[in-house]
Every structure is written in C-alpha cells, then in structure tokens.
Length: 501
Ligand SMILES: Nc1ncnc2c1ncn2[C@@H]1O[C@H](COP(=O)(O)OP(=O)(O)O)[C@@H](O)[C@H]1O
Ligand SMILES: [Mg+2]
Image (cartoon, protein in one colour):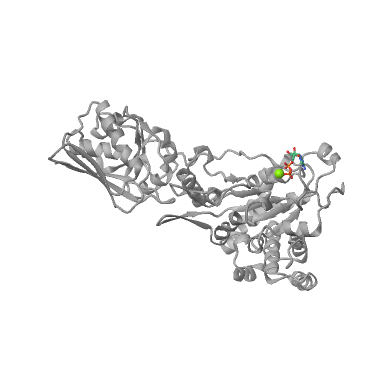
C-alpha cells in the first residue's frame, strides 16, 4: 500500500488537538508536496525530512509524495511534524513495519542527521495523547516534560533510527518514569530575611491566604521588591489542575517549561516598559504573555504607575475572568491567566512623599496625577493597599530575623482550606452574593461596618473589598463569624488615595 496515516498533535493555546499526517505515494514525476495549510516552518521540514531519511540509509521514494496535515484549518506551526512525516513516508514506501503505528503518537524535529530535537508544548500534547489512550514518542530532550503528564506512557528517542527499531520490535525503547510525584523544591527567598515590616508581612499573609490582589506603596529602598519576591513562598501549595495549566502554558511559551518548576508558583516580573503584546501574549505563534505565564502564581508589577495605561488595561480581562484572549489575524487563542497581582509603586513622582527626611517637593496635583495613572477599574480589583515605610536603620541592622516563609505558609494553607471547604474558592474571588452569604458578620462587625461606611463614605465596592479582606482575617483565626476586630483590621488596608474610599 502506498498510503499511511500517523497521529500527531497541533498546539492551540494550551490545547493539543489531534493532527493526522497522511502520506500518499503516486506514480508520476518525483515530487514532494506538503498540503494542509502548512506555514513556512513546515515547508522547511520537507528539506529536513529528505536529508534525514537519506542520511539514515533509507531510500527517498522517487515518486510523487503527497503529505497532508489534517484537519486543514488548524494552525500547524513548528517543526514537530518532521518525525511523523518521516515515519509516514517510510511506512507508505514499505520501509517500516506499520503494525505498531496506531498505538503511538509522534512529535519531534529532525536534524539533517536524523537526530531528534526537542519541540515546544510537550506537556499539553502528552496530556492529550494520554486521553486518547496512546503512547507518545518524544525527543529525549523534552520527554521528561511530557512524563509530568502522569497518565501517558512517554517514549524518549534520540534518533529516527531508534524510533524505527522500537516500532519494528527490534529494540524496544523503555518508557520514561512519571515525574509528577517529585516534590517541589522551596526555591523562593525567605521571609525570615525581612527585618521589621510587621505590618507589611501581615498584609501579605492575608493577601496570600485569601487570594487578594495587593498594592504596596513606599519610597525607594523601603523593601517593597524584597517583600514581593517573598510572596509566592507564603502562598498555599498549588493544586493539581493549577499546576497542570501552568505547566501547559509554560510548555507552549517561547521560554519553554523546566521540569524543576513543576508545582512551583510562577513569579513574573515584567518591566514597566513592557508592550501590550508582551503582557497579553501574541506574536507569530500566538505565544502566551506575562499575564498567562503568571497563571497560578504572582504577577509582580514593580513601579506600577510607570506602566503605560494600555498595558495595565489588558489586565482587566484576566482579572475579571481568569483568562486572556490573544487574537492574531483570524485566529483567537485563549490562555488561562488567573494570577495574583502584587503591585509596588512610589507614593509620588519623586518617591519620597511622607519620608521622614521631608525631601519631597511634589505638588498635590503632581501626586494626584501620578496615582491616577492606575485606572479606577483596576484599583477596584485590588483588595489590599498598604504603605511600606522605610524601616529605621537600627531595625534593619539589629532586629532578629522574623518568621520563616514556611511558618507563614502553614497558617495560610489552613485558612485557604477553610475557604475552599466553605465556598469552593478563595475570598478574593468570591462574588458579591457569596460575600454576603459567607461573610457572616457578628453584631460588633455589623455595627462597625455601618459606622465606617458612614464616616468614610465608603462606596459599595469599597465595602465589598473591606468585607472580603475581613473574611480572610477571620479565616486566619478560624473564626466562623467576622468580628469587629477583623473588620477594623480590614478597614486599615483600604485605599486612602481613591476618591471613593
Ligand atoms: N526590612 C528590611 N529588611 C532587610 N533588608 C531590607 C529591608 N528593607 C530594605 N532592605 C534592603 O534594602 C534593599 C532594597 O530594598 P528593595 O526591596 O529593593 O526596596 P524597594 O523595592 O522598596 O525600592 C534590599 O535588597 C534589602 O537588602
Ligand atoms: Mg523596588
């Protein structure tokens, strides 16, 4: 038979839909055609496949070779189809035993020598192949990543010849052991390094426990960046689905996924000069952007007021829905983008407003304009706002180290579990209806909230934010109801710059 079909995978966002690589050999002038909307890279694969086959001692059929990648309307960028195309040609020309082919799927780039090079998206492809009940042959350099998918049997190969010998049964390749159970190394800097800053530490503990977005304001050198970098280390452990999604996004990105990062919360720190495309994703491959790469982890916007408005605005969609849509030409790709926002900024253009040195000469208008760079709708999503004053020199030099991240994380994880059991999500993501159902103010709490709403003329949104944070304070104490104390603490983290709060 001069026809063969090999199974492989495309990559659309973090999904890996099936692609059939069909090869047909017909009589006629020797030709090698690739159809099925292949882009430039796939066309180049023609040359690689031809060279690899001849360098491995196979005969390139001197017939009319047609390769079709189906379905035709999927984006099929990348060189991952080299290996399935080469195998399809070998099978169609009778140079490869085809019996084992239907049990496997394949992806891999070929070097001209026939050696296999790693491909992007090994993790999401492996998850999809496992669901289809097949084994997945991958280049050895990205096989470990595929093995994290757990349920899928991954076969690592270094060379086209190894794949052929495996398929013929001559020299079967062993499957790669699943790595999914490997423990995540605690790889974040430790809170114990931070001296003083009790209030900021407490605020970050609440933010981590309730999944609240947070904004820290303070003069340069007060330790904002230091605190932000330690934030992921006090967050509760990553859940399985979150870890799978984060791995899939990273695996589909241009940076790729490092298996050491399995179950480790991402910490992304885009520069304030970042473009909309860098933040949201896009480019020739519709690659995920910073907002998606931070999925399941922390998006730290340092000098938040310095970001262009359009870049901050693209964060509204993910903050509201947990996903971000990347459009390119006629195609739309949706990536998960549920991150925790940690913003840090100076209090005014010079940075020294309120500094004990009194060196700030910014006018009130300048200060207002500076703070207004972050739009109201974005501010509305940030439950916790706090000032981070510089610590006195004696505190930074002498104080003993504070609590370790590990100790904080234990309390945070317990509080997070209480929320999950009660309402199925963290307080930071609790919709307003849920907030009133589960908020459960006791009498002192209710009285205080009524008084505060009056006195500070709190808007409805501001009340919701205060209630969310107060609920988390109560969860950290394992209190069923939200007391006046919890509410008073939450009121202290409301935004004092915003007109409405
Ligand atoms: N509370 C603190 N405890 C220990 N070191 C601190 C503290 N505050 C500031 N520092 C030191 O000052 C440096 C600058 O802090 P940084 O986090 O970059 O400040 P910011 O981001 O607010 O400008 C840190 O790297 C750290 O060495
Ligand atoms: Mg900084």
